[in-house]
Structure formats: C-alpha cells, structure tokens
Length: 146
Image 1 (cartoon, rainbow, N blue to C red):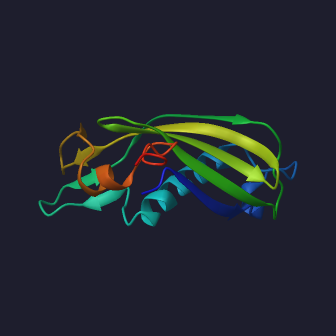
Image 2 (cartoon, rainbow, N blue to C red):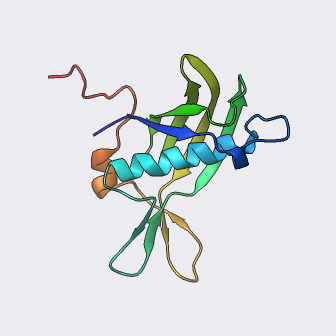
C-alpha cells in the first residue's frame, strides 16, 4: 500500500514552446501520466475490464495546476503524487513537479470511480476490491499505529 508515488519525466523538445520552456498544458499531461503510473505500480489500471464486459474507470471531475518556475528541454523532472483524500467514490490527488530542489508546479486532480457500460452513461460506484485495499491517503494512516 502506498500514499505517495514518485516518478521521473524528461522534458521533450515537443513539450516546449517558442520560448524554449515547457508549455503549461504539458503539466496536466505529466499529472495524468503520474496518476496512470501510480495505478500501475499497485498492479491496477485506470481502465479495468470486468467479466461482464463493463469497465471500471476513473474520469476526472476537476483539475488545477499552479506554475512556479519554468522547465526547459532536457530537464529531468521528478513528479510526486500523493493521495490527499480517499472518499467513498472519489480520490483527490496532489501532484508536484520538481527539478532538483526547485518546485516548478503543483496541481490537484479529483477522480471518481465509475463503471462504464456500452451505450449507457457513466455511473459512479463505491471504491472497492483491490482499489480500496491498495490505495491509501497521505499521510498513510497505518504508519505509526500498532
């Protein structure tokens, strides 16, 4: 079980704008990539097929990002994701992008656990099974408790 996840991401040339810095929209992509990598690190997926043909998914219902310093082509970024709230049906993530000791951006994502059935609208569902077992809030409530 983990409440914090860290991954790295290199700034590619295609990620930059004419000023040679990362285009702001790419931070949202990096946040989403970190979310996907977090789920995979737990042996889970954000799109989990079910035996009945439906899919458990995690659509975003809100996203925000604040920018503090520029990143440049070839910079190696550390992307830190924390689960700051685990609700009955939703997860709130706090995500930070760092270059060395400099925080470049910080953002939030809120996702809702949903079942996707062909031809039907998304339906929010209770977080259960492996998702409920493996995803914990930061700080991890089990740390220091005996």
